Image (cartoon, rainbow, N blue to C red; front, side):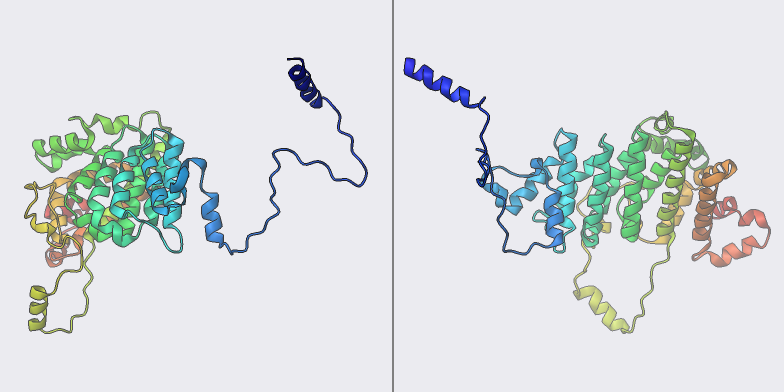
Length: 388
């Protein structure tokens, strides 16, 4: 017993002894010393260094799976549904970093990534929504186009959210989608009428819908987009916003609506055809379509679609439905926005130009020009909508 006690006292005494340094001898190394003097023989590119520097502790798998890139990718994809805001952000950063590499790495496919991350459009964290948009921009455009309908579905839900910040970020996602896949956005099932109704609700033009359609259609539009028959949610989403911020949000929404309508009213590109009629007939019969879901407009195995869910493949049908559903509401909304002046008024002027040019240009040009000769009233936006 006495020997053990003396040994403990001796070991404890070492902690309080002042070390004696001797000339010419190096200092004793600490017990937790790690040698870092080694040099790597391999070459590491700058892109790999940036990728490694973006990895956090939450993104690394413990054990043997840490060296498996497929397991790492799936692990970070699963982090996007975590309850922790930081983990959701880190997971999105990891996915974006892998897709931004010189040789993008995606072992699960773009569809699985979209199904996981699209619900984050309505996430309460601004950092998560910002990182989500960065991730979406890294996806190949060819992989995004077949799933435009899913992206628009979540974008519409987020645009009518009670939070104004979520609504603004969702508008930014729709803006990006119109730029990368304009033809697919306006021709996908339910992606023409429903986004238009959504814009009308967000811009608080729902009160003008009764003048442009029947009361039943107007009530259905407001219930589907805002969730209440009186359109009150669209006004509630901007409560608490400053006047400058509200005008900035309205300007952004009007600009994106203009881009959306411009894509829908755009004339299809005519390619020079040097083939004979017989060759074109044989191609239509025997050549397989190159685009995915080439016969989705037939809706052979899907549920019956109403007018809002239909695919509008040509610009004439899109212009007809626009004037029938929301034409008068957009016209009156533009008039009210122009009275405000400033950046909102300038954006409304640009939107009016887009609508006017879209309705003037087409198969009814000759008829429209004849009507325009009778006066400036028919040349106005109101006259064009009534003509259609």
